[in-house]
Image 1 (cartoon, rainbow, N blue to C red):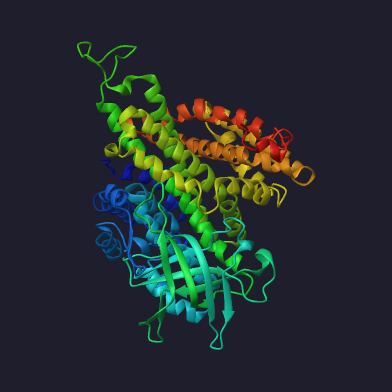
Image 2: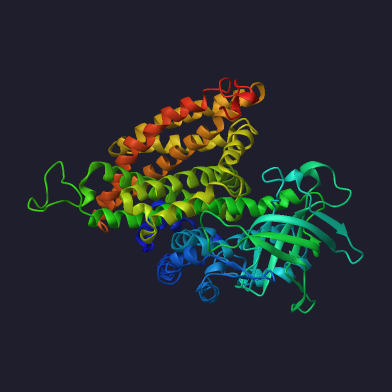
Length: 599
């Protein structure tokens, strides 16, 4: 059975020493979040997730969710009780608006809690996870009446939200949806259609579920220009806030999935269900992207969460399991075998895992800080700059983060050898659970095209260049003692800049070249971004060591892992650069018939 302990020490180090949150205390959004409160939130969230949520993980995988004949769904044993504790403790309200019952804390603190929840039980966190996106969409696009009707209970967690986009005949291409919304005399719409892959579409955790549903009105334009977004509650809400009649929005089935069994992934039937337009007609896709972008950032956090869980269990196994003898000096020459942690290849996998995990944790938290600054920085220029940075890096966090999170889980499974393939050790569950984050909220190939085709090519690389220049400036300013990472990182930025320029040049002339190179470019941005964070981590650790403050062993380990990432992580950059610039000629050369199964 896998175990989990929240990495609170590393989180505090990143928040306090790497990101130096105290520098932002003058901003209203950070006013209430002083150092003492931040430490309390981190420690208590870690304790809650480790003690209350983590024990649910094997249970959720074993039991899954059950759909009954009436369309109702039962979640795994312990989920309702844990969810009640989650709401009572206020973990879901941290960064939500005070006006509707939230705590109004910085988003970065909610990101910390989200990582711990994902590690503790990915399936459980799927239920409250999408609600925050629903709150954001209603907050930005909803009428005053809609906000008053839905937000207080969504913020408190008394109700949960879903995102109903996908249909059997269309996934990414939402312009092909068939769900129809017919206007009614009372101002509502009659929603009819089938949606699939709806996380938390039905559950027994809350009395009501608020579905945000994409549909087309009768005279809507063709394609994505004709999509509207609707609020469709499971139970209608009366004028006094009480629940009214049951809406015909029902679960037709639950998908039998590879992983995250404890999350009810539903096929939902909307049979003339009553709904209300959210935002403007035919502009639903823009409204839904508010929710989807929040979900994509959360996906990156899921990749991190699974990597952390798998690493912790693989490291514990490697320290205990004895197989073979060390090639070098042995701690106990009389022992029949040594712990496998002494073997260089096992160390390679564990060190690679830490290089990703600790660097990517810093990257996610830094991007969360940018999200806070996008809403709360002092000047419009600062807010716009932070917003542009989050927009540029969102597909990287989602795509690169979930790719590497899955890769880390697979490598940690390898550390356990045959036991990694056996259910009781929990690593095979990590692999199965981690795999889905690479697929949903826009598969990672779509994220790569969003990065290269929209975020990069749209402004001819101006936002990207500002990011590259930021990294370059910090490399240039680094002390000589940090040359071990600053020098290869600066070289990597040059390769990254050249690759971006090549893609921009090819975007209009040879669009297939852009598509062919986009995935490698996304990985390249991810590798360099994690290296950027390791430069900052190394600088913070060195500062602590120079001042003779704190745990020297902790900071010395940080420098060792920074060296490892500089030597091995950044070594991927030339390969990725070459892949990104290969072009599409050979990829597109085969005819369609050449892909048919050959006898």
